[in-house]
Length: 90
Image (cartoon, rainbow, N blue to C red; front, side):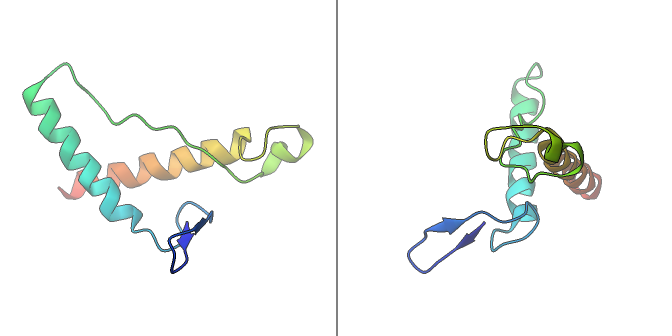
């Protein structure tokens, strides 16, 4: 997302814009590790990809705006891949 000087936001591709996604996800991973240490049954970061772009077969289907199948799966894969990379570096 990109924010203006009054903090109104405009959606962008997942990995672009002025939000530091890596830092945010790193904080989430550290919190996940803290919670898992206290409550072993707790596992994972819930992720709900939202507002995916229309790609591939999405153009042939009718969806509510932002809820395309392939675009949201692409976002999920990017988030999970980034998560795996961060966890490998911690």
